[in-house]
Image 1: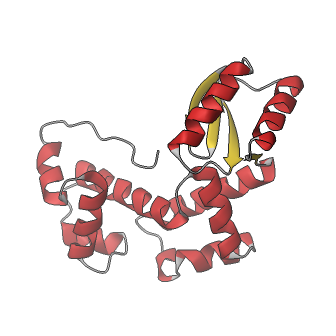
Image 2: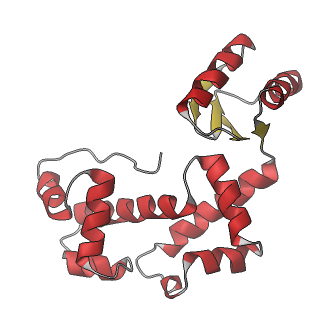
Length: 189
């Protein structure tokens, strides 16, 4: 079973390379390293956890606690719930929803989320929203007007602009590709 460790202070690809070398030197079996996260094949022993924590702290990084991990996962769950097609929550700004539901300052949650995930909450939500657009484009014949309304976009132009920025395609072009059985990639990481 995979084990995730969130790391505060990872800000670039050099950090990833540095931590990769360090975990190899420590003899740890790493599955993947991303900005803000190390994914191990299995849980670490207490001794391995201590060695890794010492390595990270000595080099300016900080392992994040389980409490931080749970908070980040709650933000992700709220994002999923927020983007449900029938969600009436979208009448409330996502930042307000997070602050109310998690009973914590939004700026604090943003900082924690960004350092743990390597992406801002705003960008994460945009990526999840575009994934939802793709899901609807692929699984239904709904019009772009309907999709933009369902997902709370202010206009089709706004939806199209974000879609193109994230995927490199327009929604209408993507819908045409759907007919050729193109595989959809996960945008959120």
